[in-house]
Image 1 (cartoon, rainbow, N blue to C red):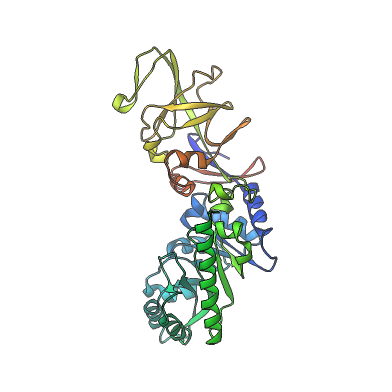
Image 2 (image 1 turned 90 degrees about the vertical axis):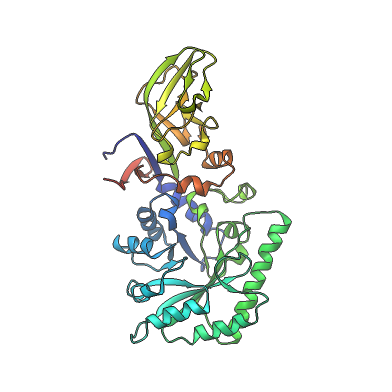
Amino acid sequence: MDYLKRTWAEISLDNLEFNYKSLRSKIPSSCRFLGVVKADAYGHGAVPVSRRLVDLGAEYLAVSNLEEAVQLRCAGIRGPILLLGYTPARHAEELVKMGLRQEVHSLSYAQQLNDQLKGTKRRLRIHLKLDTGMSRLGFFAYDHPQTLEELKQVAQMEHLQIEGVFTHFPVADSCGWPSANFTRTQYERFMQMLSAMEASNIHAEIRHCCNSGGSIQFPEFALDMIRPGIATYGVHPSEDLRDMIELRPVMSLRSTIFQIRDFEPNITVSYGRTYTTEDPTRIAVVGIGYADGLQRSFSGNVSFLLHGKRVPQIGRICMDMCMVDISRVPEAREGDEITIFGTDGDDHIDVSDLSGRLRTIPYEILCDINKRIPRIYLDGENETEILQYIV
């Protein structure tokens, strides 16, 4: 398969399958699996990842917005898709026509959707979002007696069909007592509201609350469906959970050496002259920069892999390139492959290693991988597909 070998991401479908099976092994066989493929499947390519998850048996998919759902439908993916974010009510009929499920977070939003469908025979399947402590979208599920009355009104709306009810855990990835206790409190609030709904004859086929952290640390909360995100892509949602489940990274990021030159001591490198060679130094120019997603704030604070050895990035990262000290790798040649994160030889750089350098999370690093970088899909060592966004 032909692609520009400048910078590229390799997506291991084998590792995606491993993670899927590893997560499913923690929950009852009757529990559904929702594959979260929003944000272009966390940078991994929504369509190829969705196809593989469906082939593996994932009963549902989830995206953030209508445009992401349209992308999957246009690619021929026909299974249930849940929109986790807000969709303007004027698109209600479009949602029904495409067989999508819409989250509903308030009585007023439910009324807007229902009003848009008046005069039709259409019913939109919805998943009610209950706020049990995330303090983002949702009907209040605690200390708000009017919530049940609002849900009763939603249940009576002619053009809405309640298919699911869900909540979200903000600290299920933490093992510390305060966080674990808060997650249990959330679950109790959720179950209490579900009981109140059932007592009021409000039935939902699918109850779900477990994200990645919840699926790993609290599988007893799985209910009818789990919706792991980052764990599906082989990244532990926190260091706390690393020993609780085996996961394999799905993405590796690689680039190419453009040029190699030798420099004397006291030579400055890159913009701002922030780095000065102290000894004779062999420097490689590598074809990745901040326009590709390698943030400028990594400058001088990260290493890559070359021929299985760690080599430090030096000087400021440029838009399309950066410089690396390869003095310890005399066998390096122009055109050689360099690993930004992933495995090379006996060493491995985890995306969590990079995110820790910036005191951020792996999600951000993965989602920042720019669309000019092709995604190469691998079954074993075989390239099965290339996703190129630009050409």
